[in-house]
Image 1 (tube, rainbow, N blue to C red):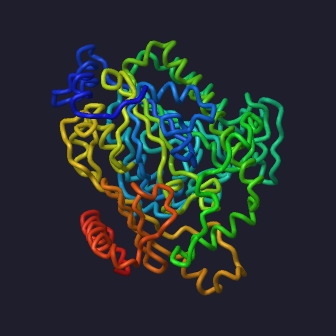
Image 2 (cartoon, rainbow, N blue to C red; image 1 turned 60 degrees about the horizontal axis):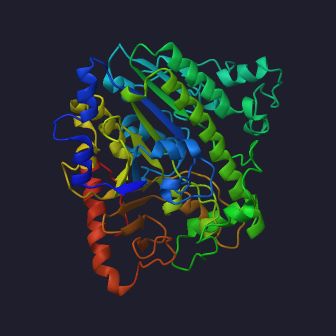
Length: 505
């Protein structure tokens, strides 16, 4: 059963009147350092768990995890595309601060990730799965063990890297008798997706993570596991698990993009419909397959959590589950990410902290991934390390010791993806212009959302009354005062975080 997170209920549950978190106090009493198990996916919508209202999808393990977690109902990424978002999750910096403003920009070696910020040699550290922050298959940024699954980023390796080396997953497939299907002696994502369940990437990561937990059960650890799924290719061994008719379509699937909507969105929607189809039947089929990919991850998560329990590690381990961005999956007739719509910019975010989350607590205020690293630093006993980061720890807010409401900001920087050349919607010059678009967005606790572009249409939504974002209110005289107030919030935030982008305001 879920409940609303309030100061009274949370303090009653946790006794949280301490300067440090109750979890950390318990760890110190047992003379143990807290563990971190960080589970995340690629391109998973927020509404794919029961805690977010989806009772159709088969995710028993994630639903069980959510039953004893803080569920951040309105969690937003820093930028809704892979590399920029991942850079924030790993470093606690905005993409414009760490330089990873577009896909395949490598994270600078001198920019620390969480294990480097913790800086404790007693910890066993491992990163497993998709990285997408440069030098994909090579250990880096404070992680002692590295288990890679992607071999498609060789052209982005640094000059000192051996491009003939292959990921652990590549060698796993070779050991099971498979031969690479690509000319450069690698396995494509499509090939991997068509394997039996036990040879797909989630099952491989489940085994790798479980082995790590068994080998390191007697020392503190930080283990990150990033699944590719439910990212494309939209195919997997559980394609037929969910009935397309029962899955259905998002309520806003047929919402038209009116004249006052961004041209970039319209052009991208046309491109995505050319790629994935434009009929309700096709969209339902894709939604069902997408559900199956999330289930595939859920099964692997279940195996990892079972191992955690078998090793007796659950009561000393912080567990985080989230994603790097969402997926439109036919909302507004669109697919993929890169938009400021909720389905693209919002993600699931669960956080299980023993002694603090004995039951499910729903946190209703909007939160940002920018606060993830500072929150983990405090929970792991290193709050001072967060002092130089732009985000703020959420511990005081989730324990009820601080009631300050907080605006959430999301940025978009140019990423050349998913555009159509030769469309009737735009000239080549217009397409070239929108390919270079920047957007800055604010989401407020009172339900307003303003998206400001430097070269395209602006958007204003009232999420409380229009959660599906079907009516862009920008330009209406009766909302000018709201627009002015929210514009100031964005401009003040830009000054605070050193974002020098000039917006058309």
